[in-house]
Length: 282
Image (cartoon, rainbow, N blue to C red; front, side):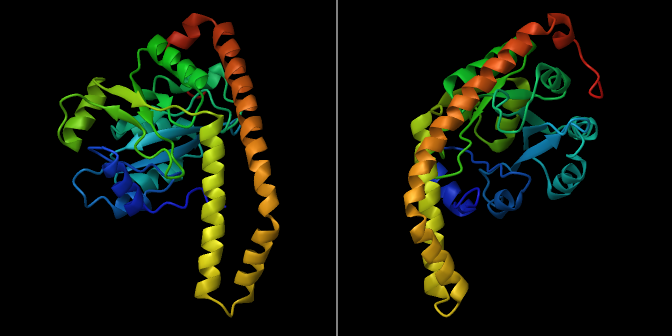
């Protein structure tokens, strides 16, 4: 399956229909979707950058806003080493947030990794529309303890969550005023959080998108045997969709466990090293 069956134009129109004044798409390590709608005056170009610690290959997700295609290319060249990536983002004055810090989706992030990143990020994502409330609470507490503002995002890979979780800058009327408000920390967050039912619903929507795409390909290429094979194989695999619901439950069991482990690690670490500006290479 793809990571998303949405189209950039469809995301934009749905977000506007649900009341968003400004829209950004932060695809994983890509800006093509955001750039395709960047001609609209109410679109902010963004990207969810996957940074890696070079010594243990632990990954972190960073939302970067207001970047250009040239900056995106440089970021992609540097993202395999956060020792080089984070100083570059800071030097380019690109607003950067640390996303879903209490989620184990990227790997075994620890208090040491968090402490290394905190001086370099401008905000923490404290309301993720696809994560559990306890995970968002951990991020919120960490943001408050480190003096960082909290922002929110839908983390929507399907149409379900688009525009349902948001960041607001009171009084901002343009994207320039909005970004200025982010830098000043004058942002407020709102909207939904995740649960078992949201993830299960997303998985079913993914399955719908997968089967819909195979059906369309079969209609478009009726003489191509691969299309028929994929469609037939998909039909045979329909009963396996029930496993998605069990997978959603297991996922959040593991996420709650990871959140608890990270909390213990944060508490175990002395307060002074976490508060100090650490060497990113440590």
